[in-house]
Structure formats: C-alpha cells, structure tokens
Length: 134
Image (cartoon, rainbow, N blue to C red):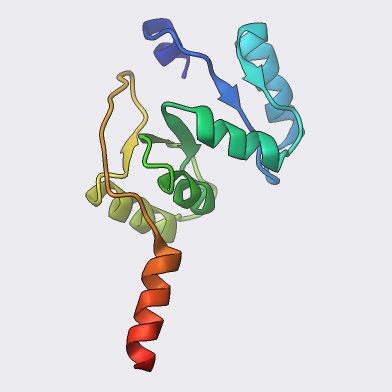
C-alpha cells in the first residue's frame, strides 16, 4: 500500500473486520496518518458506505466473505496477500476462481480499471431451485 500511495494520489479508507487485532488498527492509524480514514471499530455502515463510494477495493486474502461482497459492486478488487499460519488451500482455490472470472487481481504497484460480470448468486440460485422444482 505504501508504494501505491507514493505512485497514485488516492484516499485510503481502512475498515477492520471482527478478526482484526486492535494493535493492527492502531498501527494503521499511526502509519497512514491523518490524510487517510482509518475506522477504529467494526462498523457495518462504514463498510457498506466504503463499498458504495470506492473506485477500487482492496481486501486481504483471508476473507472470502469480503471478497464475495465486494464482487457484488462490479468494481476492481485487489487482493492483498498476507502470510498465513496454516495452509490456505481453500482460500487459494477461491481466489484463483475469482481471478479466472476476472473479478480480482493481486495487489501490486499499479492501479487498473477492469470490468467483470457482477455476481448475483441469490437470483441465480433461486432460478435454479425453481427450475429443479418444475
């Protein structure tokens, strides 16, 4: 993120999840300073608002839920790789599938704009259930 912020002029909004350690939130506030918005508490409204107003979304690799929710927006999603304590085989397969669908790209030093077909799994599954019932 530091290298991206050096290259590109954009506002960063950091929103923690339930599993984000409090010391990580404090570190982000200290590291990124007052020029970026660091939300200190888990806040669903802030999270949904950030998804709505963001041009690009960065999600850590360990949250398939956040990646899936972000995919509903149709906006570019970057995956920030972090070291895992255990083998994250299932998460890796999930990310590989989303990469093949052109939904996500790995976070590096460039910012791109791309499009993909947004996911609408609720309606897709409902249609499939109706089809099978018929």
